[in-house]
Image 1: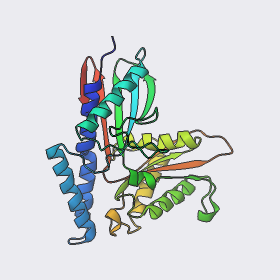
Image 2: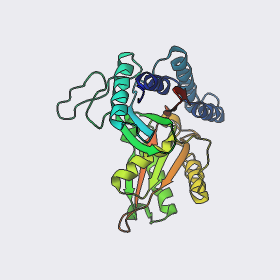
Image 3: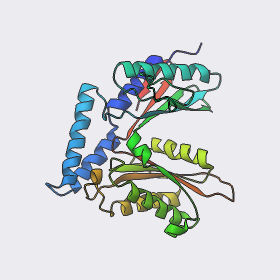
Length: 291
């Protein structure tokens, strides 16, 4: 019989909302130390890091905007995705009652908030993929509204930016997105970028790639080089933490390559704010572990 994972998923939501991953916090601390003593940039990062500590100590949300819950679920053959989705929805409702999440689900037509983060079949956002093996792996990303608002999509070529259908064109539009975001995306941010696909698959992949850790390296050398280049050049723009100017505008860049139609060349950019809330749960042999 398929087990009920509601309680385990609830703990996944709590951890994601209240405990920033170690690799993100480490990078934020390193960025703080690079900013000038007494600068607004360093002050902003000091405040961010104090907030991270308080949220962890008190098991309270890292940010008042607890974001859209994005679940990426890998499940074994024979499991019911219908049951898993109901359990995810129930865990999100319980997390809202416990104040790990803010009530965020609003009916676009009526403007009415459901009050418990319940919604239609697209809220919370759940993506399923069947895999080999006997374990269930659930990745959760909580993506805030501010950084989602400055996320964007380009189609190449883009004559206004002299961006062609190549990796240099990808670099140009990515930096353009960072310039347009300024402090409105709650910098320092992380860029999730998808190249190719159709409009829909490209956007989803640009969020899914944010599951990667900041300190990993893209297995494709050309994309690894591009990730480093975009991050380095974005940090030369002097936008800085929260738009206060400084050396740290982007914490990292993650890129995924997709097949596409010959007629289309999309570049989708999911901007993730400093509150880079993502966690993973692995359920195997009746036990859940969290990363």
